[in-house]
Length: 171
Picture 1 (cartoon, one colour):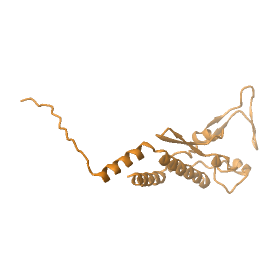
Picture 2: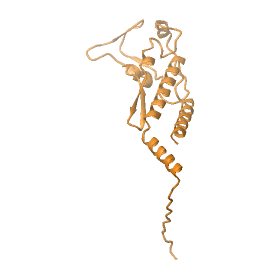
Picture 3: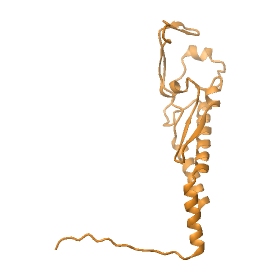
Picture 4: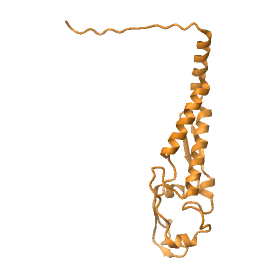
């Protein structure tokens, strides 16, 4: 005999008013995640600021490359972490909601990306060299990647607790 495809259908009707009210509350809460996403964004921004204050490491635990001796000598605030000098990168960290699905975190500072990803800085069009303080004219300057954006394992654990607390609050 050949196997037959059969579908079993179970219909469940809930008549308990308290259960129905709980399900309605849960459904409404799941539709509006803005409060949760704001909480997660604030948490990640604060964690990222602390990472900058601490001088790393990257979210995956990799230590940041130390500053070059001359860079350290020229630094305004020598007692601060590698990416924390004037405080502008740290102070401009912010989050933005991407609909009700995601949170984006970053900084509007022009140098934020090169610190995150690393890269080579070259003179603007029409110029032959960069004037690097303490080093004179250079054709290019290499900046190592020092990832500061992202979630560490500790961040993930904190966010998980916050999501669970939120789910309990809407249940």
